[in-house]
Amino acid sequence: MNEIPADATPFPHRAGNLFRIQYSVNWNDEDPKLEKDYVNQSRVMYNFMTNYVSKNPRGAFLNYRDLDIGAMAGTGKNAYRSGKIYFTMNNYWSWWWEVDNERDELARTILTILVPVLALLWFKWTTSFIRNGTNRPPGPYGLPVVGYLPFLGHNLHERFTEMAHKYGPIFSLRLGSKFHVVVNSVDLAKVVARELDQTFANRSPPIAAQAITYGLINVVWSNNNAHWRNMRKLLVSQVMSNANLNACQGFRTNEVRKTVGNVYAKIGTPVDINEIAFDTELNVVTSMLWGCSSSGDYFQGFREVEFKIIELLGAPNISDFIPMLSWFDLQGRKREMQKQNEHLDRIYDSIIEERIERNSKKMEGEVEEDLIIKKDFLQIMLELKDASPSFDITQMKALLSDILVAATDTTSTMVEWVMAEILHNPNVKKKIQEELTEVIDMDVVQESHLPKLKYLDAVIKETFRLHPPLPLLIQRCPDDSCIVGGYTVPKGSIVYINIWAIQRDPKNWPNPLEFRPDRFLNGKWDYNGNNFKFLPFGAGRRICPGSPLGEKMLKYILASLLHSFEWILPTDEEFEISDEFGFVTKKRKPLVAIPLQRLSDATLYK
Ligand code: HEM
Image 1: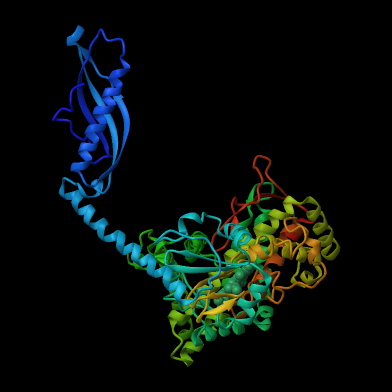
Image 2: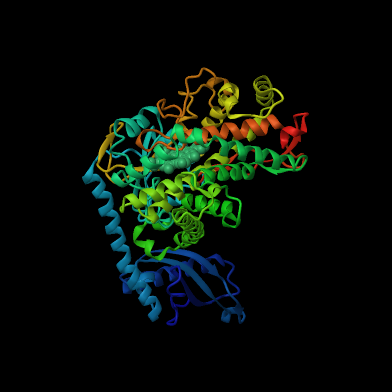
């Protein structure tokens, strides 16, 4: 075989370390031992490679890849064959350093700087954890910079519950630069929301929340401070007090009767259950807030706006996990939320301006007797604003948003879940109807009937157990490092109480996945957050202040829909009962059902 030709060049130089040698070899046609040439070729190739490596100090291990025997030319002793030998060579650094254009050189320089910087940051981040507290809750490792984000998937409540099975009742994970802790047991939920409730009473709001809360001055997202306490006190004492709820009974009766009439008009056709429940709740709440229901131009498209807000609050946002990127709003979540807020803001401005104008006419004595304004929540807030300069219009709007957003989607989602479970369980439906007939007979449902509907109450609670609309509650944030379950939870961590896991834990609930309302018939269960096995409205200082209204409305809407109508599922639609995680976790596929007349007396639908 010939020696390696002088022009045998490594090829292509920078892609994958694949080299090619062109060769030509004398070939004796008459020689029967053709394999010999292969041996020769291997030897020549080996020589070339060793030679190349000795001149190329960054090179190392060589590996034969392929042999292209190539074409044959000539005959007899003059025959020769040309071909190619391919081989790979581990050529340390060559792909990194041996660039031949400016663009690659720039990329190489940036990467050369970035990689060690990121590695250093990661190292500092992990060692700072070790320094600040060696005893972090167990949990999965993540990647540098993004942490465990790429592995989380969509249904966070289910994923966290799976992780609790692996890591135990408390675990931690890093998402971007934020340290998250999830507690999954009754005992540890008690530590967070009872024993250390004060320490854990701050929130850690997502960036999207800032755009909808006039800079986080509302009740849901404010930290535990004097402002939050004042706003919450106002909400509880003026809107959710027993006295006010009783005074507003007429609004609820009007709106629920209107809904029954609307459904009656659609008898025999498919109805979206969430939509009717949403509209009823919205009308009740707006009546309580400013004395008239949501009909009118202001509220065109409000349901879509609300759904978008809830979607954006629950959607993963890279700006939340890597705050130094928040300036760019890469996913546009903040911009989208600002758009929704502009819509709501227009509604509040019109309503507040209208009321101020009417108040001034009233003061001038121009207003007729029937226009004199009842003291609804808006009126109470305006009077408060006049009396206390620290309470301004922006705070009023933040509070209105709190109530409108927190009340409507949660309640309508629950009406939908309860109806779905009832239609899924014919025995349960039969028992509810028997109870309704026994308590109400052939009459219209009144609020006074509701305390007697014990079985319906148990069905609602069992649905709350299996489908809590906020399965991780709303994240809390400790204002100091503290110990939970023997582990250190650092100040500023984001902490979730996983009630989805607690309410489905067989240690707390026998046969937890079965829908068995009877377990709630013993009268021991309520929504006050005292029994940590059942926390659909949360617990501690941050417990939902709207539960009295939520509970009343749920029962009233459901009793009225179930007493007035026989509900059947459309035959052409497949029924399913899976959920989709979000700030409010809803039924994946909206529930559509067909109402049929149940009461023989048609006047009961007017
Ligand atoms: C079925 C209906 C409802 C459900 C399931 C529900 C559930 C919840 C939950 C789980 C929380 C978080 C509690 C925690 O972090 O521990 C919460 C907070 C809150 N809810 Fe509700 N809620 C409902 C109805 C209402 C209504 C009608 C209002 C109206 C005023 C309301 C207003 C609020 C507010 C303002 C907060 C924040 C409290 C704070 O951070 O201090 N909710 N709700």
